[in-house]
Length: 473
Ligand code: SF4
Image (cartoon, helix red, strand yellow):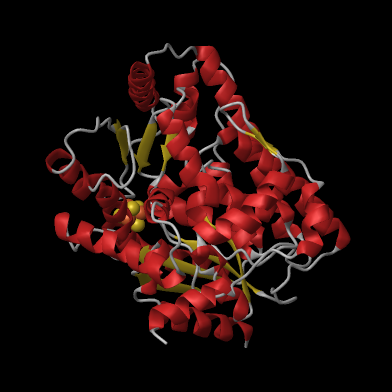
């Protein structure tokens, strides 16, 4: 039997949500979407048990190396996060066909102005996943290979020195694998590869409008707020022109209030998890809540409704003293630190750990937009207040605070190959955090993002496994 046949068979025998939970699951609330549609939990169940395993078999693989493992079926809100992940492709294509601009946003900043202007922002990670999912029926290995092929082509077109994240996204756009209507890089210091990709957009992608948002290094002056507010004003005007409509301040306030609400649910759920005696949900579900609080799955309305369900379910589990399946009672609590870097949670849990958050994404759910005065100035203040973007010593102080609040036992600082700024500051943050908290820190360079983690995985895993063992013993 060929390797390909073996892999296909393995996937056919892959994970399925058990019928035994169907009734309880479909009794939970559905989700409303921005286009006016409503999806009941019963419809989600049908999609996840019939359609998705056929179209996206790699997501149902039993292999632990897949980063979006669906295996925990005890946490219903987590199942719905999987629904949002697996339907991202269909929802983006449908929105694009209906004239909603799909905008690629780089630099790790807020998405409020994009949704307010009637567009859908997509950041590099989900964009690369979207490009991979445009081919259906792939096994885990085939999906990984497809993601790697896109990356390799991007490395040739841009540079082998550039990090995987922008390269994969940029190449998917360059090859027209997905329809993108505008590209908006935030020129933030944290992302050194913005420079590579800007040059690439100038030379390789000429037919998609570009709009830059400058992110000044001096952040806390009135002038800076006015300056960024003006750039956001221009951005919203440009998106409105693409749509042929006018975007009012009322539209902006409606979106800001919605996203503030979502961010609060995310924060409250995360803090409940941190305070709980036993880890009540799996690392991946916590990560879904944190990234859900930056509305990265194409719909801020469904995202907010789901975060409300997350909060309710986490509250119940903490009240009932539930221990998440697959997580040790005395799990080593790890926090990950760095841009576009996360720990492979299945792996961490299998070795007696649990992940309690990532400083980059957490920074966004703690940056509400003020609900008074000029909405553009308030959005600018929010962006400029991100702890993650602060000077290195202040950022380290923010991590110290996170370590204490999350009761982390270990800190894994990581940076991707090609991420020059983060590679320069990562060691410094690790040292400051260790000195201030006494908590052990690990400093890692990684080379695997998303499905491309088929590459260069073992070395990272060995070091994380040893780190967990060292803390435990
Ligand atoms: S890893 Fe660093 S260089 Fe790469 S996209 Fe993220 S911030 Fe930018």
